[in-house]
Length: 243
Length: 266
Image 1 (cartoon, rainbow over the protein chains, first blue to last red):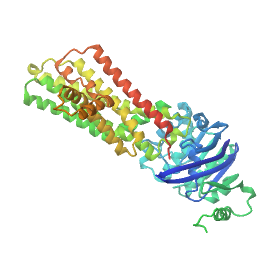
Image 2 (image 1 turned 60 degrees about the vertical axis):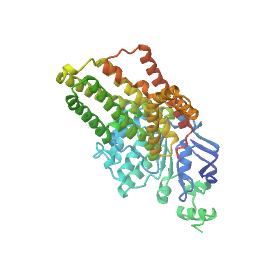
Image 3 (image 1 turned 120 degrees about the horizontal axis):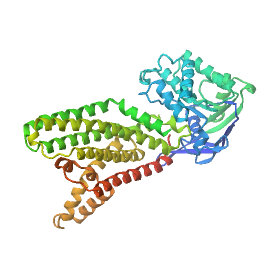
Image 4 (image 1 turned 90 degrees about the horizontal axis):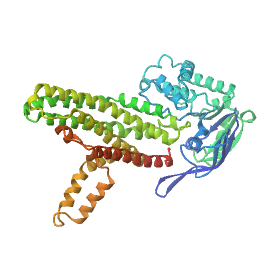
């Protein structure tokens, strides 16, 4: 479903100062798979996601979703995205925001109404659904953003730190939602620092350090706890903080 | 999907407290017009028309500068546009949707202010009828339409500037500068072209002419005098103004789309 082939991306921070965020990254995620992408801060995880969604463009390499190049916006017709921090129009209510999200995907009003009712119920936001999002807590905003990412029943769900800002109840709700997506055969790409969730939810995991994919494999075939593998990989990559 | 983006943009403007403050200010200025006419008691029709149209223009300008200018810039800063662009929404649709929403907001405000202007003029005519003169209500309506056209053009420019500027403050400055220059270049050009070389340096003359051709001529949209005196306006003049406004807006938006398509949304 997702295919990145030798993708590189460098940013110009200031005249003469360049940072390579991603270099020679190749990875594939099959349909129906839940892929966990982990790495230290600044590893290139969010950059990889933004490249996948054509928010930024690679300097070299190719990226496809369902065989379509990401430069073609139709590749994202069945993609739902949750950014790292919830970026929501806070002057809207949750109902209005989900209506907007649904209309962006061309959903009819009746479908939006049904889907938003289901998602708001699953994410325990029904009581607050007619209040402006500006009055929501961080966790409620995060859950609203998750609902918006799923309103159109996407085949590929890209979640960047889905547990960010959530209390234990919120984490359970989101965890169950992702498990349900997995059961329904959806393809899920998760970037997260919560390694226990990655171990429990994901079929495969990739460890990105300093823009490169250092490890990739099936979670079921891990010979050590994921945290240990993560630290080992980061040390191999020569990241000073770990050494 | 463009309608959805336009509608959310329109709602954003409607729910912005600044819009209510600006509209209230314009309303108060128009109410003051009635008082002012009572103090002048001469050519009150012209004074009232000038004041109401100036209030409407000022209010619409404030909406562009304090609501419109920050709209796309804030979207990019807060990354609220990720929801739209991570779907199958082409970037040009997003940009035109935002622009359409801002234009719709301007239209709603100017329609409201037109109502207030007409009410003010009717009131002034009732109170001071013998000093009212020959104000054309039809032309007052047309003048408000041209104020809308003027502000839609300025909004198109602010959309373009938001894609080249590093912050919403710089967009604000560029938009304000465009308004100030565009409102005065016609008069400045006439002045320098009629002056002798001793009165105006050739470099200044060239600079003024360059500004005249580079920046939009907002004077073209000013129908205050015609409305106040009930002067006839040729269809050609009106047609040219309409085409000029639409053409310039299309050019600004086309360039904005080109820039936005290439922009990295980090």
